Length: 442
Ligand SMILES: Nc1ncnc2c1ncn2[C@@H]1O[C@H](COP(=O)(O)OP(=O)(O)O)[C@@H](O)[C@H]1O
Ligand SMILES: O=P(O)(O)O[C@H]1O[C@H](CO)[C@@H](O[C@H]2O[C@H](CO)[C@@H](O)[C@H](O)[C@H]2O)[C@H](O)[C@H]1O
Image (cartoon, rainbow, N blue to C red; front, side, top):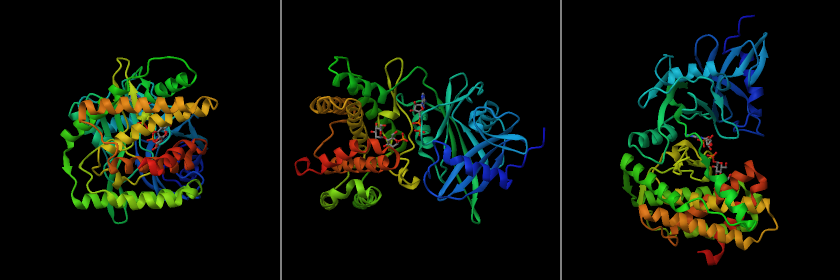
């Protein structure tokens, strides 16, 4: 066995740079971006957490040297295997030790909410996700989310979930531990979160799949009991109430309202630019929608919210309770925009859009099904959800210009998301944008 190369050797950076674009989480697909090592945190001799700069992004790549390629190798260099440490249980344990405070590493700081998480054991990586890498360990008692794109500042997935955990919020799995890193930027140092370890909800169903299956069954003419959207609405309102109690609320000032409107204007411009081909024939309507934003007088009360709420962020436990995940905000948004207080309606419209997506996805699978049945299905789920939300938080005014503006904002965000990630799905949000821009929808 030959000695391993040091983790800051140029060959190591080059091998990782060549491998990253093949991963699901790489955020710069299709772009030409040189990668360079920004910082290395050694975890003993044979593993390290590396931060690589690629284009504008700072990417986290935990790695280890092994004699065998293991489940996820990056490259073979000098007779040893450089592997993705997320797939290597020993390296996962080393990372967990730092997060739990059991191992000290310069420039890394762990934090546990209470009892440290159980030992990693035979940990495994969750398949089928996109923005980050999640590892289940501790005999299925925890799930560790490795933030692949690292930002200076607090990650809301740690701070917001941590606050909800301390407040004992029921519809959110508890945060157990987190890891913060310090790295140099110019002459100064900044800090940011690398990892969040949460209680794993085993045997849970994914809400997206539950609703999609129900929409499919309905389009096929089968009668089935629908998953309880009213209880889901109440769960979302409960989380909003808990977030307000834990992190406070503020009545929007005139300046808040102005900056909210200009934020929406900018995002509308961003969507027009990013999805120019898809939105070309809606140019006049989008111009009018932008002018209508100026009619918003006040945005009401502001607070921390989920920020990217959709059915894929919701689980139904085996006991039938709805649980909300992933308080990281919209991944296409810069981090400083994600930490701000927002109207609760942003989350409400996220869920309403998601029911439309579930039906849209079912229609794509069953193109001969009656569209009126799909529309009625969406309408009913949305009504039930809003009724449940109102049970705990009071009614939502669907004619409020803020509600309509946020609905359009979300659908435009989705158009950009689909143009970049899933062009086959583009019609789903595009149809919604068309509907929302129709004069009768105002
Ligand atoms: N606490 C949890 N318990 C059970 N499953 C979870 C938990 N957290 C996440 N998951 C599963 O992992 C998936 C991805 O998690 P998420 O936090 O949404 O990651 P990402 O930001 O990469 O999308 C979820 O859709 C869910 O299936
Ligand atoms: O889960 P992420 O935080 O990575 O969120 C991004 O990806 C989502 C898709 O996985 C995307 O959600 C859109 O598609 C969903 C169906 O797959 C649908 O339920 C959502 O309503 C729709 O917005 C999300 O917008 C994006 O930020």
